[in-house]
Length: 358
Ligand code: MG
Image (cartoon, rainbow, N blue to C red):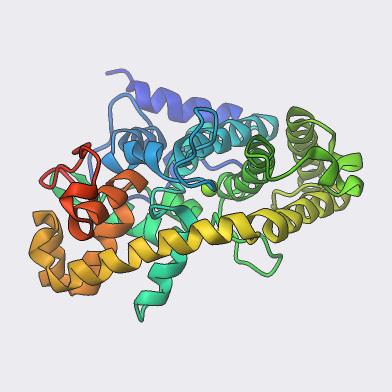
């Protein structure tokens, strides 16, 4: 009897990937044991489960930065996710890492984002004693809310969950993922959003290129694609250097480039993310989320039936958090209109509300 295609793939990984890459055959495994797939490695299976999940499809109607923007060319949480995936795969190819693991983490990393992005995250964090963080909620979605063969969660490999929980933050004091693939996602997320949010802010008329700090553009480049190319190339070369010299296993750009990315990110926080336009929109979004939270706390039977089971087992707060955080911006707004706004004032309802499926 010959070996299976999956075993061929595992063998190929062993022969061809870098010595510091994560081999699928060496995975620490899943919470519930499963038979191996005859064709796909465990990380390929994980990636496919993420893509086929409802939470993944909902990313298309979740905010990146600008809430329900009127144009077709603004990023959504879905296109952000795809940009992170692309950037991460180029870095992964440059470092000869496990591309399937990179892709699984990239596509899963933001599944726990709320409607209205950070506005939703902040208000939910404020509303429950246990707090709310989107990266922890991504784990919650992957291990409890989504289902695989009627079991709880998608039962993904340990390395994917480790990469997802460690994707946020950018301080040197933060704990980082155990795999280099996970570390690539954390950096690629920053590379992607700082650059595409600059692009979208210019598109929205909130920023002109000349306002960006010149010192950082001098280092990174003057166009969107130049800046990404600089960041990606430098990260590959610098990380190869560190690893080659036996200075530890860590994915990072060189200090000069790192400073420029951090500088641009800080500028974006001051001027855009925490600037007057986003703040005003955020207050409106928070109002909606807060009122929905209070409503479903009072009327749990109005949630989809699935969340009532969670309420019984894990308490009402958790169930309402799971329900609301899973909503798209649109579903959230429609629910708010349906509950709080007189019928005569609501333009013809779009009725994406399908309570049984949600
Ligand atoms: Mg992200």
